[in-house]
Length: 359
Ligand SMILES: Nc1ncnc2c1ncn2[C@@H]1O[C@H](COP(=O)(O)O)[C@@H](OP(=O)(O)O)[C@H]1O
Ligand SMILES: [Mg+2]
Ligand SMILES: [Mg+2]
Ligand SMILES: [Mg+2]
Image 1 (cartoon, rainbow, N blue to C red):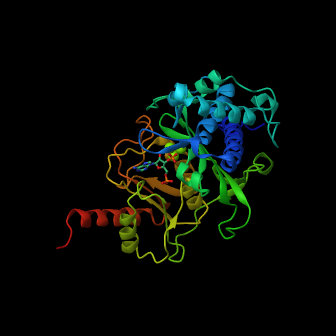
Image 2 (cartoon, protein in one colour):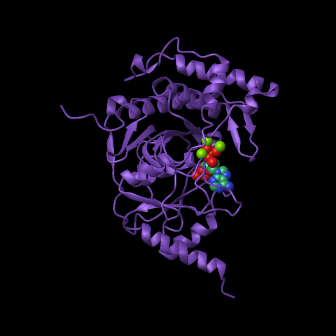
Image 3 (cartoon, rainbow, N blue to C red):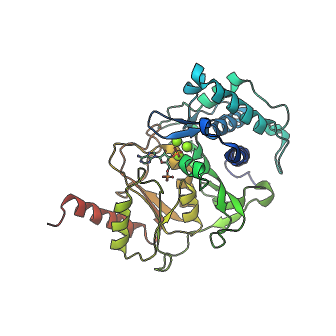
């Protein structure tokens, strides 16, 4: 008998956790009311969907991998205040509805899913706070973005539930659930809901979000050659997240003729991996913001396993061993092997122009 593939158990549980969280976020979207969104200290929004998705994923991970720390985006501090009571009650209700839901296709009871798996409010707040791990260079931990692209989620656009396993600073497994992403980009009004999985050394795959286990191993993704017709950029919708004017200049240097595709969340990495767009470019807006590991970890391994390259804006590898952030922000460039070096060269040229503008 051949040895089981590396991270087989982690992959299963991560898929199950991300799918359950997607069921929750998709249903919450239809019921979301204005009072169910908070503005965090950094002015960014967080909804009951973000909190309850983090509670669900961390609870599911904790049952099978109780020793594994988690670097999660959200924390429960605001929910532990008197003023957070209404929000907390709603989160407890949503998380328990999701955890207690009957087994979905392909799920196993031994994963701690299904009826009577409900948790107390305190247990759920503690589950959210299991995401407070500091990260670091050595050892194994998960990183979770319960809703990446919260602004997209609120608009009804793209968002993703993103979970990755990092071992000794290397991303080994990435799972992303994209409830609003069309199954094929060529049919934008067709069926939606995709799940993306990559294990290092085992390839990148797309699965249907509604029944991922029934479709394993899924459709293998390989970034196609970057022909001039295919050459376009994938970039943020939000001007405050990336310097979009810089992207325009880089695109011009590269001779890109197609307009950029603007999309929230790591769904951009998924789109790159399956060839819907050719270059992911995210350069800092100059606010001193540091990129967070949960915003890139699962996308990074997906792109690499689809045959692409991901680096910072200087061509240096992203460092997932620095803690909760990627350290000083030099941006992110992800693209196919045939074009990545050219993008880095164009970024360098655009930067040089910025630093010594022609009079
Ligand atoms: N000034 C900034 N520069 C870069 N990224 C930022 C930023 N402010 C917030 N973000 C991050 O941008 C992410 C969304 O990325 P995108 O623009 O590609 O959709 C947000 O994730 P969340 O929505 O999970 O908070 C947030 O972490
Ligand atoms: Mg956020
Ligand atoms: Mg995010
Ligand atoms: Mg988020």
